Length: 147
Image (cartoon, rainbow, N blue to C red; front, side, top):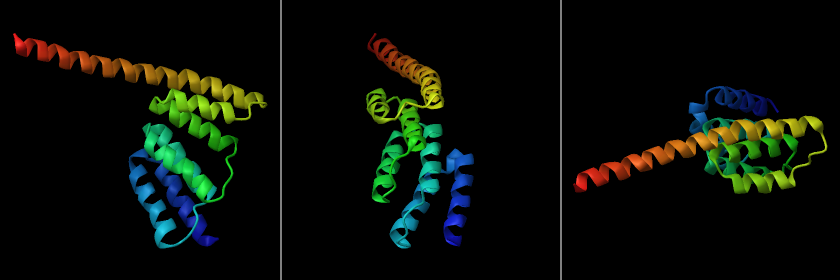
């Protein structure tokens, strides 16, 4: 139990500094593979939250699978975090699938869903606009080079 508390504290510091996400992932692998321990729900929740901040869909999906591997049933917080991670990374189709499986009977949950859609949809559209600008810039440079 003491070791779990230490790991939790380390992972909480990772959540505060999202540039440490890869280190957190590496530590998770050590905990599972080298020490043979199952990660706690707190550890997975913290890593999933960091994935929201970093918009890292691939790591989000890996963490989502770890909940099942660790025999930790999804709860409303894990559903909300995964939904936000998918929205933030721009995977709207998968976000809708997670949303369809999420219990929505609590008004606070509905409010968080609504706010997440507002915040992350805006981020996704900004990301798409930036990508389009870069693509147009590349095409424009190519057409100038041909002349």
